[in-house]
Amino acid sequence: MPPEIISKLAAALAVVLSRADVKAKFAGAGAKVRSAGPNEFAAFVKADSERWAILIKERKLQLA
Image (tube, rainbow, N blue to C red; front, side, top):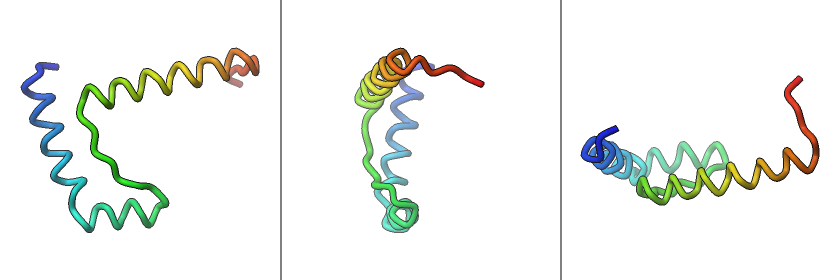
């Protein structure tokens, strides 16, 4: 995806996530709203994937 599109989407998402009603809706589901830029989000996904991959290998988990 072109970087300018990613930037526009990230900016629009940050605006929506800053709204009180949106924060309240997430809070009602037990979630906290935290806006992150595309690079921070990519780093989070990478780290989370690596963490789960280790667990899956250690526990020898498989899809049924």
